[in-house]
Length: 173
Image (cartoon, rainbow, N blue to C red; front, side, top):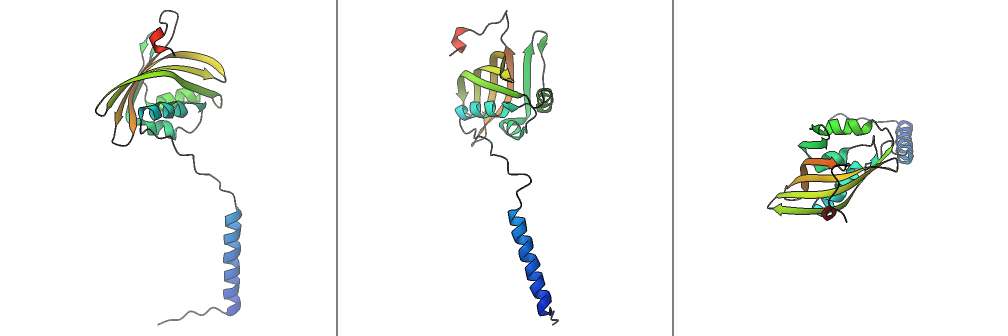
């Protein structure tokens, strides 16, 4: 059996260096603090709150929670005057990120849902603003599925209100 012996002074220096490194490292602030956890989507009420939270904030913010609320193959479909445009999550994120650090806010002002088993359909009236200025309001048609613990969005089809298509009273608060 081979024995390693450190001279007493070398062992003392080693312990001193290790203790300095440990105390210095402990006092160094974290370079990348842990992100806040994403909101729960265990209920449909929580899903609506999580969607608002995931969409709102600086336009170029981290979209981890947005991706968590959606299924990977989600379809995001704005209906524009020239027809529907199918977007991927990356398409949507890129389009919104063009606004830089301007704050985007989306708020669901009223929603109603119908469910069957693990499938839900939500009609949701929303308002959207950019940098504090009202941008649009309209209606989301949200399809969601339940995985046994959380609701996840598989499709959102939405149309902004315009001069021809006003939001019906039944969808307003």
